[in-house]
Image (cartoon, rainbow, N blue to C red; front, side):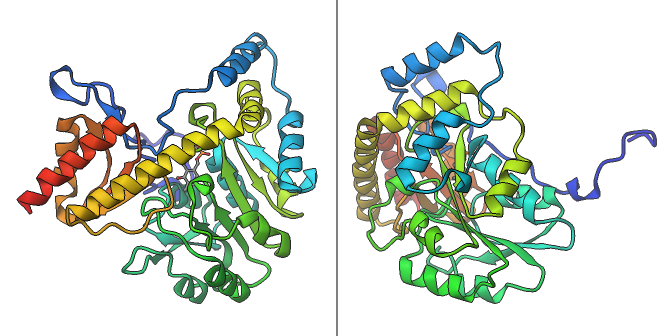
Amino acid sequence: MSETSPKLRAELEGIPTYKPGKPAAGAAAGGRVAYKLSSNENPYPPLPGVMETVAAAAGSFNRYPDMACTGLMSELADRFAVPLTHLSTGTGSVGVAQQLLQATSGPGDEVIYAWRSFEAYPIITQISGATPVQVPLTPGDVHDLDAMADAVTERTRLIFVCNPNNPTGTVVRRAELERFLDRVPRDVLVVLDEAYREFIRDPQVPDGVEIYRQRPNVCVLRTFSKAYGLAGLRVGFAIAHEPVAAALRKTAVPFGVSQLAQDAAVASLRAEDELLGRVGSLVCERTRVVEALRGQGWTVPETQANFVWLRLGERTVDFAAACEQAGVVVRPFPGEGVRVTIGETEANDIFLKTTEGFRKEL
Ligand SMILES: *Cc1c(COP(=O)(O)O)cnc(C)c1O
């Protein structure tokens, strides 16, 4: 690099770049259909009514969107029975998570999260300049909340709890979460990342919004990307008390959430019965896939999300290649395991056929 290149912040060095799930196109050899099971997307295409709404909004994209997201905000305020001042939207919940870091953390501060967990956490933490404190999952691939509470220091500013956890699908339940929150100092922000909330069927997993009501240092993140099928439109939101919600309004990228995204989110909330019906079908597929894997002899952690985690260690990359060969793209974490999204029935079948063949080779 030349001496005259622009000076960049030292914190950016060594930040891993976000690895998106591999696209399906061209993945399968010989012209077979390839399915993308690598990004936890919703496999169903947009609902016709939502498409129409977006098409109508497209007619005015020469204009800036409604910066305050008025329609969406009031819809969300009603639905969750929270004041408007406790809501903030953003460019996906990852966008909102990054704003939370900007608002709370900088060089010298510490941010705690489980590991392995959502790969955006180390990236956005390091961008803020804060120090990531990664607390290993338990041997059962669950958040170790006791160890996370033990890791709190005077420098801790923010703690992520990813529930269910990406990429393992495991959950923390009400009693253990409450116990953990009782141990966290009131001036540390705890972010409950509930990107997969709608896929949860375990009644012991708490609704983060109910926890937020009792605890001023808790912020809940939700997204339209997964259950609502709007991943490509980039819209998520936070529910948090003041002054956190106010800080989110300050750190928002002006006009970040497009009018297409805002209108699609409102239309999706109004079509929720249909969308949650699709979620129900995916949950049935999840049960089928997990039972089939266990029947084949695999150990699979209990998942409450729209994906399963297979711990494959050194065989991870080989397995991902075998999947690709068979026509499904999965998400490998080399040396650890693969995360596989619950997708179309045909795609899930191809995955299960691949695990069956692989099992025999072990
Ligand atoms: C997918 C995902 C999100 C949502 O991302 P968006 O930016 O809303 O698309 C947030 N957290 C976790 C853990 C996720 O897996």
